[in-house]
Length: 448
Image 1 (cartoon, rainbow, N blue to C red):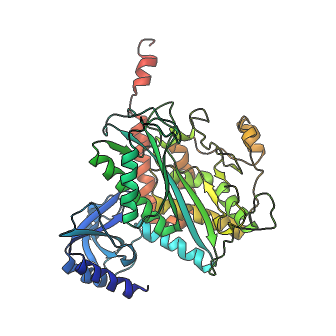
Image 2: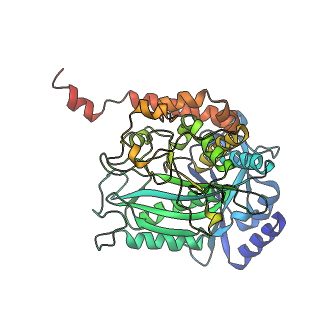
Image 3: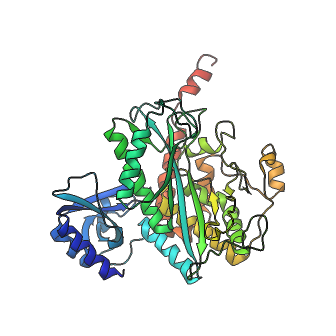
C-alpha cells in the first residue's frame, strides 16, 4: 500500500472496530517508550498536520525555549491493542517526531535509523534484521530473585512462566509481530523470545512492542520482567542478539556467495563484518549503554558465552559476530549474528550504528581479521590483538571515550543524539563511581 491507502485503511478500521482512543507511540534517545492518546476524531488531522506536544518534557529532546514538537502517525504501524475491550477499543500507532516546520527532528531515533536506511538504499542495499531477546522474571522490580531453577530449553513442571510466555506470544501475534519461537533460557527464571526478520525499522518497532508486551503480561501475572543485562552475579546474562543481512532491490541476499564453500559469505558480507569489527569499540556505547552492560561483557565464559573482543567465528558463541550455519537452498537466510548488544540498548540506534559501520567496511573494502574458534577461547589479550582482534571496552567510561571521538558515530547519529547521549551517560558513570558499594564496605571497612 502507498501512504494514502494506509491512511484510508486506518481511518476505516478505526470506525469499523469502534476504536475510542488511539495511542501515539514514540521513543526517546535512551530507548524508552512514550505515549499520548488522542480521540479518533483527531486522527485524520494528525495524519495531515501532526499532533503537537511539549518536547521539553521528554528528556533529550528539546529545551523549554524550543519545546514545540509534532508527532506524525506512521499509518503502516497501526494495530488494535488486543488486551483492551472490544467495545470502546484502543489502538496504537508509532509516530515520527518533527519540528514545527515539519522537518524530521534530529533527536528522534526513528528518524535517525530512517536516515541511515536511506543511505543504504542509495547504495542499493536494504537491511533486514531478526532478533532474539533475553530477559528475567522476578517477584517484583526490587527483588532480583529467580522464580524457578529451570535450565536451557528444559520442559519441566517447575518452569513457572510457560503460561506467561504463551500469552505473550499470542498477544504479539495479534499485534502482527511474528514470533519464531520462545523458550526458557539458560539462567534460572531467564527466558528468551525470537522474532522473525523484517526490514530494520519495522524490526525496531517490533522490539519496542515486544518489550512492552513482555512487561505487560508479567505485570498482569503479578511479577516483573527485567531486561537488565546482568541482574544476578554468577548467573547468565541477557542479550539482544541481532541477525543482520543486506538485500538488493530485486530481493536477493547480497551476503550469500555460493563460491565460498565454508561460510557461504560474499565479499560484501565480509567487508560489512570487518566494518563492524573495526568500529566495535565506538559502537559499544550504543549497543551496551549502561554501567551494568559491562558486567555482562566482562564475566568471561563461565556463566554464559559473551564477547570480550572484536572477534568472529562460525560456531563460536563467545565471538562478537557469529556466522549461523548455512542450510542448503536457504540463500535468503544467510546472515550474521551480532552477539554484543544487550536488551537495554535502543534498537533504532543499534541498527543505525551497525549499518553505518558495515557500510563503511563495504565502501573501504575492509578485510576480515582471522576467525577465532571455540578452541581459541583461552587466548590471551595480547594473542587476540596479534590476530587483529581488539578488546571491547571494559566499562562504560572506556566506551564513551571511544564514542566521543568517533566521526562515524557523530555522522550516523547526528550532533543532537550524539551530544545528548554522551552527556547523559557521562553523568551516569560519574554517579556510579561516587557510590560506595556493599562489596567495598565488606572488603575494606574492617581492615582499614
